[in-house]
Length: 112
Image (tube, rainbow, N blue to C red):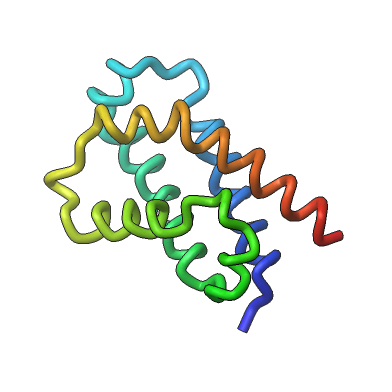
C-alpha cells in the first residue's frame, strides 16, 4: 500500500491539472464546455479516490481537511453524473480546490 504522502502528491498533481484546465475559463464557459467539464470533473473524481486510500488514522491527524466531503463529492460524481450541479462544481473549483491545495502543501511540508 502506498504511503499517505504519495496520495497527497497525486491530489496536488490533479489540482495542478485543474488549474491549467480552468485558466481563463469563466463560469459560463465551464457550464457550456463539455470538454472542460469532463476533464475537471474527472480530476475531482481522482482526488476523491486518492483521499479514500488514505488511512483514517492519518485523516484524524489533519482534521482541517474535509475528508468526508471530498470523498462524498467523488461518490456523487461517479454515481449521479447526470445530476451534477455545475454551479456547485464551479464553486468547488474556485473556492475549495485552492484551499485544499494550500492545506496539502502545508501537510507535506510538515512531513518532510
